[in-house]
Structure formats: structure tokens, C-alpha cells
Image (cartoon, rainbow, N blue to C red; front, side, top):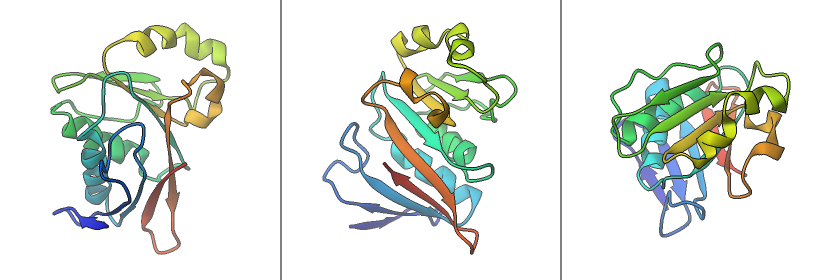
Length: 161
């Protein structure tokens, strides 16, 4: 089944609960930051407390724009920015709190643990981990893995793996 968001994003759904965790399976295509945010909003619709979502992809692939939409989809009015230098940002005010990590600048799993990673895993909310593939051993077994890719025509593609 194909669905179109009013913002123009396209996503392909092959399950009855389109974005339900953990059975969510989706491929998303976005041609603009607004479309990438629309895909994030759609994913937020059914996410549950305790969900961990690992985002994998190169610089500029759309991970932070997706997260902007995700936080907005949960009802947060917070300004979402890349946590590359702060390493973790917290967004509240929505249905769930969002803990937005960026592992890009971390050199070791010990650095992540020193940020309170284990406490965040126990907190009520949803965790978004950009560059999650740097420390897969610290992510729960039921983590949802999303791969972001940039096509030659500039479109961004998201696939769950």
C-alpha cells in the first residue's frame, strides 16, 4: 500500500499497523526537508514509551529532519537541533519525552555510558540515536534500525533493517 502525506512524502506500508513497534516496516522517500519531517511525524503516531530508534546514514541524509518531525508528531513544540556537540537533547511537552542522541563524536562506549545512557533506557520516553551503528552493543535487542541514504537525484530514502 502506498500513502502520501500532504507535505509530499511517500511511504510504502506492508503491515496493518503501519508504524507500530516492533513490527513496523517502512520505506520512505523524501525530496525535501519538509517531506523528511512528514515521515518522522508519521513514525511518531504509534511509538510507545521505551522505544529506541537507531538512525544510520551519512552526513546530510535527513536524520535530524526526521527527528524534528518525530518530536512534532508526539506533540512537542521544542526546537529540534542536531545534538552533535551537546551529544544529547531532551524534548518534552508531547505525548512522550524524546531523548535525542548523536553518537558521531563519541569515541567509546564508556563515553556514552558516562552520559547516563542506562538511565535514559529506563526513563519513560523514546530514544533517537543518530549514528547508532557506532555502539550497537549498547542498544536493546528490540531497537528499530532505520537507514538513511541519499540518491543521486537528491531524494532521501529511509529503510528499516
